[in-house]
Length: 118
Image (tube, rainbow, N blue to C red):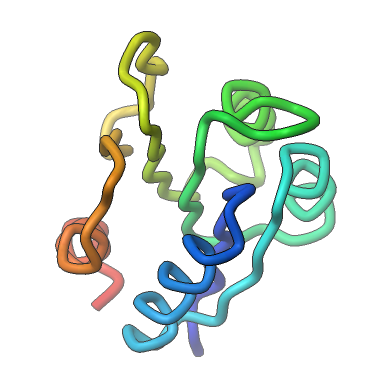
C-alpha cells in the first residue's frame, strides 16, 4: 500500500516537481496551494508525509504546522518544512526537517529515506 504525501506550496511548478519526485518513490500524492486548503485536507485525510512551504496565502505554513501537531491522529506524520527564508525557523518535532529553498529532488529523496518509507 502506497503512503499518502501532501505537498503544500503556493507555487504550482514547485508542487509539480515535488509531486514527480514523490510519485517516482511510490507515494500517492495530493496538493494544496494555500494553507486553508492544506488544513481542510488534513482534517479529511491523514497523510504519512507532508512537504510544507511556510509562506502561503490564507493560513501560514506555521498555522498548518500547528494544525498537524495538534491532531493526535497525525502523530506519525513526517514533515519537511521548506522555506525560501530562514528568519523564523519553526520548532519541529524530533525527526521532522527544515530545508531552505531551492530544494533539489535528491534532498527530498534523502529525507524520505531517513523517514524509512523506502
